Amino acid sequence: MNVLAAEWLKIRSIRSSHLILAISLGAIPLAVAVALSAIAMYDSAPASMRASARIAELEEVVLIVPQLAMGVMGVLAITSEYATGLIRTSLALVPRRWPVLAAKSVVVGGLGLVVGPVVVFTTYVVSRRMLESRYPIADFADRLPTLVTSSLTVAVFALLGLGAVLRSAAGAIAILVGLVYVIPMIVGNLPEPWSERLGSVMIGALPREITGDDLTSSVYGALLSPVAAAVVLALYAVLPPAAGLLLLRERDA
Image (cartoon, rainbow, N blue to C red):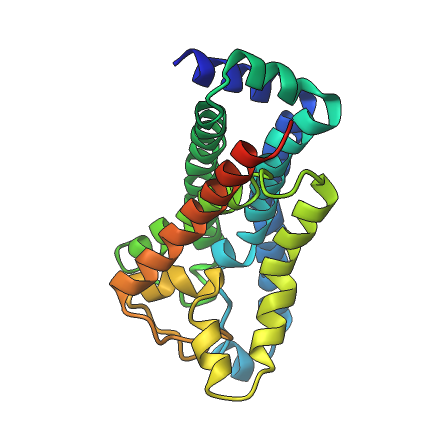
C-alpha cells in the first residue's frame, strides 16, 4: 500500500498528468463540435437526402483521444523516471521491483477505468440529445454493452503505454500510434484471408466482437467469438506490464 500511495503521489504531482487528463476529457467538446457540424449539414440538406442521413457513433469517433492520451500517461509513468534517474531511488527503496511496476499499473489503469467511461458515456448522452431529432440513434439499452467494452479500451491503452519495455518515451509513444493508425491500415490492405484474421485481433475490433455487435460496416475483421475477443483484450492489458517486469528484473536501472 505504501508503494501504491507513492505512485499515486507521483502521478498527481506532475503537471503532465493534469494536462493529459484535460486532453482526454477534451474528447467531449470535440464530439459536440462534430455534432454541431452534422446538425448544420442536415439542416442545409434537401429533404430527399435527410431521409437517408446517417451518422457514426460519436463516442467511438472521439475515443481515440482518451486512448492515446492515457497511453501517453502510461509511457511517462516510467520513462520519466528513467530520464530523471528517479528509477534508481524507487528500486533502492523497493528492491523486489515487481511492486513498483504493479503499483504503476494499478494507478495508471485505474485512471483509465475512470476516464474511459466518463468520456464514452458523456459523449453518448450529449450527442444523443443533440442529434436524436435528426439522425437515427441507437437506444441506450442496445448500446450499453458496446459503451462498456469501448470504455475499457482506455484502461487497456494506459497499460499498453506503461513504458517498461522501452526506456524511450518517443519510442513507446510511436508504438502506441502504430497500434492505432499504422498497423490497422497495413492489416486492412493485406490480401484475404489475412486481412480478416489479423483485423479481428486489432483493439478497434474487440469491443464489438465482445458484445456480438454487427461489424459488417467495420474496417476490422469479425472472426472472434465474444469469449475469445475478451481474452485477447485482456492479453493486450496484461502482456506489456508482464514483459516490462521481466526486463526490469534483468537490466540495470
